[in-house]
Amino acid sequence: MEMSPKRSFLLCGIVVLTSSILHPLPGRAWASHQSGNAPDGHRVEATISAVQPVVKPGHQGNGLFYMTNATTDELAIVDPVTEQIVKTIRVGKRPLGVTLTQDGFYAVTSNFDSNNISVVDLQSLKVIRAVPTGIGPDGVTMTPDGRLAYVANSGSNDLTVIRTKDWTVVKTLPVGKSPDNLVFTRDGTTAYLTNCDSNNVAVIDTARIEVLQYITVGTVPEGIVLTPDESRAYVANNVSDDVSVIDLRSRAVVKTIKVGDAPAGVSLGPDGRYVYVANERDNNISVIDAATDSVVKTLPTGGKFPVDILFTDDGRRAFISHRDSSDVTVLDLETEKVVKSLGVGDPIQDGVAQK
Image (cartoon, rainbow, N blue to C red; front, side, top):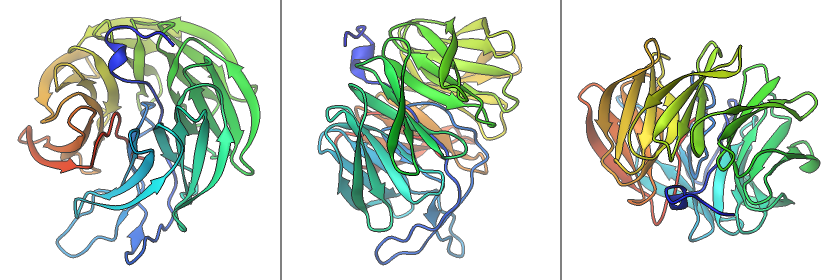
């Protein structure tokens, strides 16, 4: 797969939300937590799930991190409260994407060099299934009803659609070149997929599992997020250094917003007022006012090559993953200062998200 000069710094991928469920780990009690954020569609090599430690008096948990280490071929489970890795699990070769199933019982990694996904039982903490995909899977996401998993295969330019009931492949759907990040509408009827090397977004009818049309955007589109009312989509274009705003009713780009150098991850703030864009080469975040579609401020990240962003429910802090500095930093959105760094090993590579 050929890559542009900027895009050679990372591969692309996907994330998904999951529902509430208990996840016991050895010696610990865990409780679920439902975020108000919609799926952000960005590839994850680090996922912050909605499953979080039981809150103790005077202490607020921030959720577990599920991270893939592409060098050691492992899924790492990190407690951001204690700032420790509580478990590592060997999966396939060069795992890139990771997400949780809708019922919360399983983590699923997309393994780029194995051409498959690994299904990890989060109770036994073991891989229970390996399912073949296309070439170079770098992201996986679930339909809102949890019945299907869509895997983006950047090497074979297609999606592998897998039934989660029995982990059987039900369809392979050709899409654009180097498919990257996918996000569903809340009702699950439509999916939007960025195709990095086609410079477009595919609109997918999920009932028929067919591409309805392609929307041309900027150069090397990666992250994508929908507004709460699902009237618009924001797409981060890694090489043209801008964000395409798509009107989802007309399915056309209505504005292009210049941001920092090499935007990758794009996330919606908890209140839906602002869109946050991680600029890899500038090591900062562009904050877009969704009412005016203009950049209103630039925030530090405290790490190298920021790739994705998530927020605590109270909207006071953001968690930012970094590929080159292999850490997740915590940004206080009130003071606009980085207050903590969670080192999680070498390397994180890409992405952070929450269900």
